[in-house]
Amino acid sequence: MSISVLGIYVADLVFFGKKIPVEGETILGNNFVIGPGGKGSNQAVAAAKAGVKTYFISKIGDDQFGEMATKIYDEAKVDYSNVIISKEHSTGAAAIMVNEQSGANAINVFPGAAGAITNSDIDKAEEAIKNSKIFLTQLEAPKDTVMYAIKKAKELGVDTILNPAPAADIDESIFPFIDYFTPNETEASFYVNHPVETHDDASKAAKTLLDMGIKNVIITLGEKGAYFANANETFSSPIANLSNPVVDTTGAGDAFNAGFAAALTEDQNIKDAISFASATAGLSTTKIGTANSMPSREEIDKIL
Image (tube, rainbow, N blue to C red; front, side, top):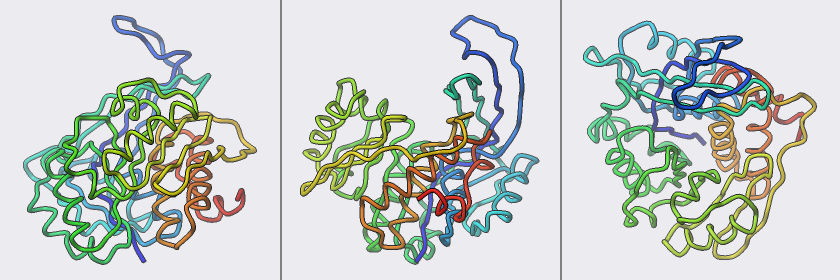
């Protein structure tokens, strides 16, 4: 079985320094790299590298950054036949500031061509969605199109994952169409209007989200692991045990979602799927970059 991913591709412009500058502050950085990024694109690459047939649905510009995208899709064996190359829009970009001591980051994203994806583009990708076991998306693409795509996937009998990043207001009428809702602690806080920092906070937040009509909630808590809840069970899951140090957390959430989706396509149970997701995410933090840091299936299996 396969996964279809709707999202954006942008070129990541990554700046490394001893700290992340605050508003009005200028610092001298220590390194700078350009690489492929965008949550949807990262997730598609990570899922493909985890060994699952993956379709990516997006829009890029006919430019140098767009060429960077197709190159990594070829390398990762992502099916990008539903990635539209636009003559009217340039490929987007993201400015990423990384604290090289902690690996923490701050990101500013301009979607570019992917911000122009439409409902008709989703209709053109219907065959890919229909052939998938899991449909995975986020909130970087136009929100109305994301909601349309989620409903389309459910109409086609496909399980859906919404990674609500960046956090944005969502009409609660969409919640019954979401099979798995996967915010991090910051995004969960946005939806439940209280801080989510501990597993107890996550438990309270998950209950609120379940009451809204979502079937399954997974809240990722960084180094504290993840918290899962549905109508029948709740549990906490630890982070993966890594042998190498964390150097860059950018893209870890994308790796988690991709790993989780990949495991579900293989009919892994929910606990094993979250462990697989955590291993995928953990390994991604041991390398610099986003799409380029996504681990292979061999690397994932080695630490499980």
